[in-house]
Length: 260
Image 1 (cartoon, one colour):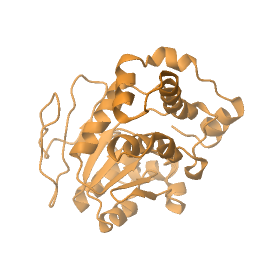
Image 2 (image 1 turned 135 degrees about the vertical axis):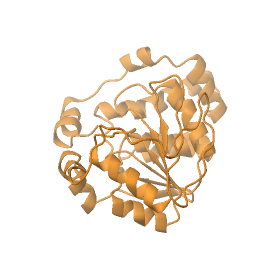
Image 3 (image 1 turned 60 degrees about the vertical axis):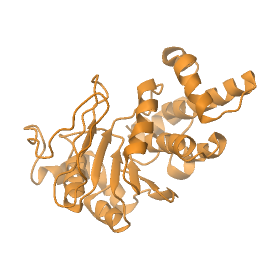
Image 4 (image 1 turned 90 degrees about the vertical axis):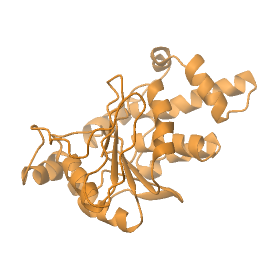
């Protein structure tokens, strides 16, 4: 299991334990944590982890529809996988699972995912991404390293498989596979349940702001130009002021669908 603690100054990596698990390798700014690290005392245990996952984390929805798609020869995107979905992913050849919700020892879905990845010899990467705030610069840079280091094929997921994984799928296709950004933006689509008029639309607005900047400057909107813009021009607090939501979409996303 690999845990990217984005609030900290360093990145803490913990590879999955168990037979067939990939070996440990160092993380930027930190040292690998032994695979036999002690289980935190606050981790939800026993049958409670199933009840918590099924009811509180809405796994009953994902048991019916997992919102899983293959978006490139090396990457799948999906909602929060159940243990059965992890087993199916392993049979498809998946070697790494990137969890965009972050590590959650008090969430039954995450505990079951962690256990299933260990059981099937998959590396679990915990990389917390926000769906309702201006994207953080360090997230945009760390994502590149995660994709460089990952063992493919990869399954990347959030809770519903709509917003955070949509944003990161756009970034992956654009940055890692060279897909034109306007084409990659198709990963933020109603097809996957994404609502651009809710607070989650800030993710679309982020990429569209860069495209508008590139057009105004008369430059090619390629990866190099994107990261120059991120580092030298993009101001998250000011950017956030330029985004407006529609109340009905926010109610649908936050109150009805109960998205994270």
